[in-house]
Amino acid sequence: MATTPVTEHNEPSTPPGAPATERERKRLHTKLKLATQIGQGIDGYIIGGIGLAMGAITDDLHLTSVEQGLVGAAPLIGIFVGGPLFGRLADRFGRRPVFLIDMLIFLAGSVLQFFVGDGTQLFLIRLVMGVAIGGEYAIGAPLLSEYAGRRGRGRLLASLEISWYLGYALATVVGALFTSVDGGWRWSLASSAVIALVCVALRGGIPESARWLLSQGRRDEAEALIEKYGIEVDVAAELDERDEVRRDGFRALFSRQHIRSTVFASVFWAALVLPYFAIGTFWTDVFEALHMGDNAVAALLVYSFTAVAGVTAGCLVVERIGRRKLLIPPFWITAGCLALVAVWPSSTPVIVVGFLFFIFLNAASSALTAVYPLEVFPTSLRTTGVGFATAMSRVGAAIGTFLLPMGLDHFGAEFVLLVGAGVLVVGAVVSQFLAPETTDLDLARAARTAREGA
Image (cartoon, rainbow, N blue to C red; front, side):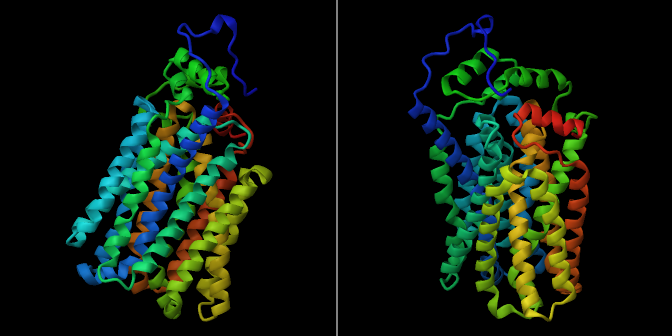
């Protein structure tokens, strides 16, 4: 049952006010969806924007290979801090304030990138921007999920990953346009301020989550919102979940009740993004190591738009084939693709086809990074859990991004690709044993399914 079980004796003690018109409801949902999608796209934008700019940044700021790795990994390190921090704040103080504050921080960082004078300044600014992006992951998609109905929720949330890849692709295009401009990398990196400004404007006036209000025992306020906007919430299930969470903070993530969800969400997400981020950030270096450096820019554009096609496909099929089938088989196939390129690096067709399959299927499965983590935790732990899983995913991605240029220098592209294949195999094994099937379940019931291993 996914309707609101409000009976006469459970009427709110304060009048909820006149229900919103259908136009007002659609306006709220559209505004929330756009504000969340743009926020998700910004992460892809700052990751994608550094790829083509790295060469010019290295020349202008005289970066060493270690400094290159730090600048590339800075947002990922920041997300490691921002995800758990803002996630905990959102579970404790509400979704609304965090939803706005994190984007204001990102806006300031975007502008400051234009004025950096050395690698240390750029690293610190992008680190702070990463903290804000961590907050975005912890609050944006969870807030949207808490307004979504159970049917079609997977497709709606997966569409956020399309925004990530579109942001990545857009940054690649913008970066390519500025490659021939003196100091163009400054304009390329600072251009994210325009997107952030639009996002800030959209976030004004978005109400609090009714599910979060229920998790805080504020039932009257929650039911007023549910009635006003026609939100689909199983109130009884949400209240049951609230009663079952006995501990506050991060300790609850490692309790017997929730450790399964914590391990699964963290490991599958990290395994998906580590190879993608590392290879994408240093794509030119990887291509040069494979003796295809002359085609690196064109290949990066193909890489970006193939990923957009892949995540779009994942979004379209996530409700039809279910979560597990979209996650587990692609893990094995993409591991095989990277391993094939590693053992046959002299064949151009193998390199092209192997990378295309890897990019497409990896992106298709990545649609679930905006779905699974939100479904396996109860409302009272949702943003804390998503924030922690985000952090763990970025730990892996940051390590990969930091170590990849040194790995290329010391061991070559073949070794780097084999390591990436191994990471994907780990993701496949963990998902096989821990991934629940949550398609078409109310959020509260999906979390219970994940906890019980059904």
